[in-house]
Length: 114
Image 1 (tube, one colour):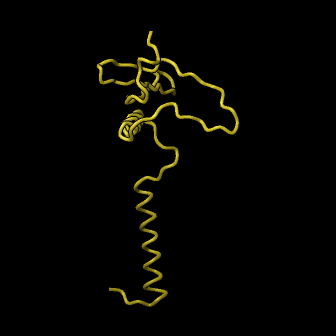
Image 2 (image 1 turned 135 degrees about the vertical axis):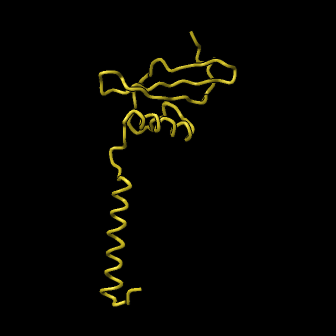
Image 3 (image 1 turned 120 degrees about the vertical axis):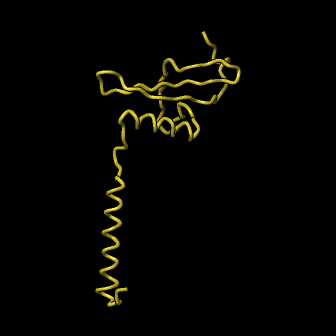
């Protein structure tokens, strides 16, 4: 059994995800590799009462590069942001904007076309 004092505060976090077979659930795995060569993983999470008018504390902190790895991992599992515009949508919106600007400049302001 590991005592909390054996694990340093804020160790580097390793996190990855995997799909649960035959389900729409995703498993999240948390662990760490420490300098002394030991490996640790989170077995369970403890939920505590959240009193009103208090700030929630983060469950853990990770480097941006590790968060990017998690996002890429989730993407490879087919999980996408719920609100996103595709590149085609952005290109179409940009083209419509340019068409509008051309109409204003050439038609309304009577600037001669090149």
